[in-house]
Image 1: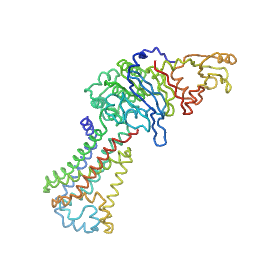
Image 2: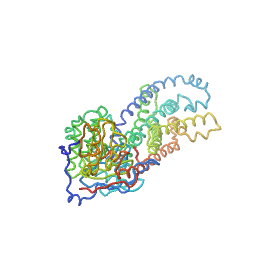
Image 3: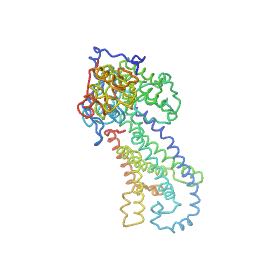
Image 4: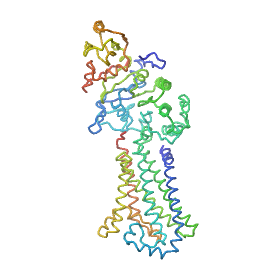
Length: 335
Length: 267
């Protein structure tokens, strides 16, 4: 279970401050088809200026498609996206002056030294030579090594340095911490926290759930191209749900946990992971009839909630609607 | 910003450019060494060449005596070495900034900065112009330099003019490859398309020379316009060829720029 008091846990922006801010990103019915293949469908979301917004989903859910539309690299098939009030397709250079981007697997030019690469990308953004130096030292990146000789983690550091070395008000990152070791992940989250403290907006696409929980103010969950949930992390983890991990003496019978508000997240014989929404007493009474070796009840983390929206065996009404591709989006106001 | 992109383009072209420059320099130099021997044995070589069908030899640029500097250059460089070098360099350079860099994910990085797509590709095209020009110059310079050492007596100005035609020929290849790369965003597909067109045109030219009934095929071939023999030997430029190459290069690059600015850059 995650410790939400972790050192880089980010404080919430006060509601009175946020209400006056313009939106950093606005998505209205944003849709993209690749021929008959689904990209994303009818995305509706606002990312407030100054917040860290998580965009959660597994591979193929539509995260990268959304980011490519935000960057003006591809056009929407329908709907619209606005970045700081600008259209990323028709006003791409103006948008690009206001954002820094880190792709999920950037194809760096391997023959270039990290320093040369960062200087080049920095110069294109109007940054002075060596703007990356302090960050490279902080992330323990050797800038004199050709990129092709760097490990996956060190290549990812190049990307992290690149995105944070400027002063752009919006940072768009696609799975930024992939390949980073735990120490560097912590440093990355600290950088996100500092960016947020500076009033910069961070759009963070990820399938690293603990990272999202630690870094983000709000989270959108995307499933098969559709948004199924947008809520603050605090609201997500505190909506009267409990995560129940059971170890039984004997495997439970099929349908043993078919109780009101109870969702079976996983069941591997004797180990059962449940999500309980609402009153937990019916479950506790039912457990009295079973041979329980161990039980752990906790508030669910983002990971539990993510799977709740993703599992095909969702019991909640939101999940069923989302699974059907219907209007299952569940939006909660930012704090 | 365009200058930054242009500098990087040149930097990335160093290995390919230097590698091909060494090849053309060595090959051109060696051929130039042999030129005085060809001149000294003109009669014997002419008799030998007569053993082959005239049309067949014409298909490879041999339409006169190898002792003529223009026929010599056209045969060994213009019709043999340069098409290969121009195809390799033109295709490799022109498919890189759009197709290859989109495939590897590099182009997303500069294109997510204030650098516009037009300037990004414009810088790359400028890089192609410079590198192909340098290669054409080195090709001619190698022949001229070694020719001077062995007393070949080549006309420097006419050889340099021939180098300009070689350059335009390579630019035309790059223009077509650039357009194919922007359309397909696939390096292998765009390179195959361009190489296929070149091979087809090479065959058209041969067939047109060997089969008089199919002479019209020659008009469809770039190689029909690539001969620099008359330019070196008589100072007569083939303005139609120069115009065709220039037009194809400019049209290909311009269409690439227009399309690249408008198209989706799919991962």
